[in-house]
Length: 320
View: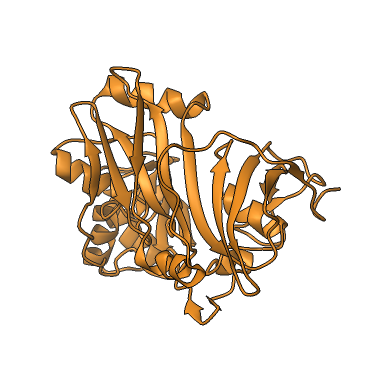
């Protein structure tokens, strides 16, 4: 990410945000206004959408100029159609497509899953959990403040149960539990490492290998914790990174089948309904890019109730 930061001092004090950005960064006035409009400008740590807001002495202005290799002003692709999996008066569950951010990014507002759901509802959607940009699958939102709070508690207290499926490199054992803490990898920004050699956060993943072949595996994953990049890092620690996951060393092709993105899919979610308390289970169909590996393996995707069983603890070379 490319950013520029400056402080409102001297002649910048009292000037409008867009005017100050244009002056300090040497940009045309229209471009500076557009940066404010798309949400790429922050004043005092908060996103500023008012181009004419006056700066006060000492305020710090941060401008996102590039994110993911693109300018915030680059034309965004048209939003995909929203696939609703379940909806009632309190809850809406949707199938997040791969490539879509769960919420607005630092450099741009609009075009995220929360924006799409908000447009569908005609009001703000209550986001309670997030999937990585390239991960597809079930995402649930609250439709009222009370429902959002209750759903968030299901995740916070560990009562929400999740089933993911993925295609990985070869070599996975039949089943097991990965119990390895996660910490940011200082040598590779944006990546997490699964190891006991660092002071990481606890992370626990149950898995069951559905197919194990010489070139790839298909696996069912039942995370018991919800850490950033947990499944991606745990599978890498097992020596079988997710196919298409370039950040973690996943191959772009296996068994003659292309892996165009990180082939991880949130296939099912079970949690208590915020009004009735009864278990609500929502499932999302496996997308075509991942389904090709199920087809190549000659197996169907898992369905129905999420299994509770835990496998034996798997020891990896990442443990110190």
